Image 1 (tube, rainbow, N blue to C red):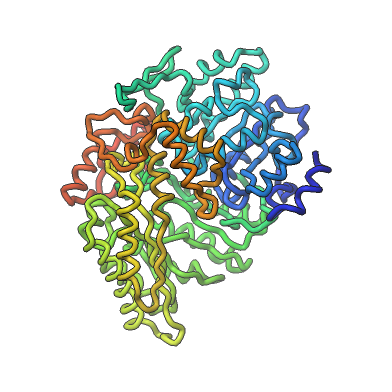
Image 2 (cartoon, rainbow, N blue to C red):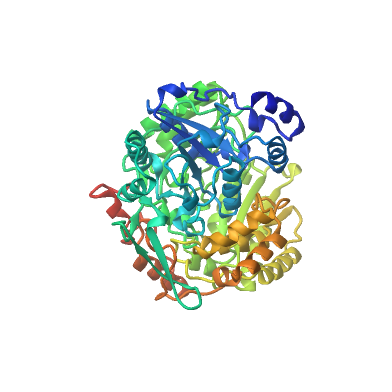
Length: 611
């Protein structure tokens, strides 16, 4: 196979995506391990190698003596064509073995528009796509990641979904698989046993109930499977596995740096944010642990940047202590220490200057909405004056670049809210004129506006999404009002967002649509130059499925939602309460101001939430 690859790789774009051999990859003796796992990321190498979860789980799995975990990424269409022409299977980077040689094929699902790539990767490996067609234990397909907040659109293709954080539950699943393999269990026996592991969802053991219109009415478990699957969390991050030396990519990737995870969860409760709700409760690492991990990774990988990552790093309680412990060490070694984004109401010039001893970058803030009224609706507890104050402090101290992130199509949105985005952009430029000490350098304000997509597990999971036509009308309106000197305006394709909205709140009827679209040639649907909406429309029509039924319809509180057997720790009652407060224009306090009783603390079983 390697000789064939030598012929192929010179003909494809970015051959380093497919060659392996990177620094710190793990090679084991196949004969010395009991199970082989291939970690599949259904997007290109550059995206997958930037994903922190993959770095953690790859290292964790390979720390187990009986397991060898390898990596595989979705091949770009040119590489797919070469593989198919040469009749070569999709393979793992470490060994070069086809995916069909592996016991467990593990996908991470980070984006709904990667679903067709999951099917394509299985097909390229010569593995039956549907779970029901894979009869034995070999090639067991498991999947985890944020999209498992609603796994139903992929239920026909995945044997076991891992709900929540994978460090502990996946090891329990591997232990069970090791036993089943040794004792030669039938697949059904294994799946029934797997359903008994907390956090494991086996869709083959659940039957959806639908009405005469095909609308979801509930789901019925069998073989003793639990009626509700409760997500798993890692309770103590200080003692959890964290890689000392992750694989260093041999080509440029999206996030090419040390990623230091400071905490999980978020105190804010933004009503549109799936991660902010499904990653609860809040758990922090100690500064001592983080300092040790950051230094170790930087020394072993040779990276010249450490990024402090979380959903809201400026809410980490001991951020100053952490930075004090790293800044001088990093500066002496010409390593930059960075925060990917900051909250305007917690912006500190002193902290920003200390962080940027090695390299100065622009600042990023996310107001999300253009008016205070709409920020209260979405529970974005940020005032306009906080943003102006932060920008003024930054401009007065030498910064001249600011990125602002917004959404359009939010519940209750009006044109006045869109006007507010332009007003804030002008206001930031005016602040620069008044505060900058070096106006000769100019200023650059970038305003990026994404399309709101209602997601499962959030207070807005019942809300309708704007239609493509409505979003396009708003974008045309925005293009007119955003013609502002020194301001760049960016927007997101509403067609892509609409498709994302369909699958975010879909049920098992979408399995047939995904399969049909894949057969027609859909791949890399999240990439603008690869998305084929004509094929998607054909697939929806052929399957008799209405896209608007999923994306654009308001759901009532008494409706059973297709994902409600998956419990991510936040109660339905809390989400309903927050939805009602949104429509009343009422903001809610963050977790530090007072516990809202969302339910996530129960996952800690007597532990303490790090608020």
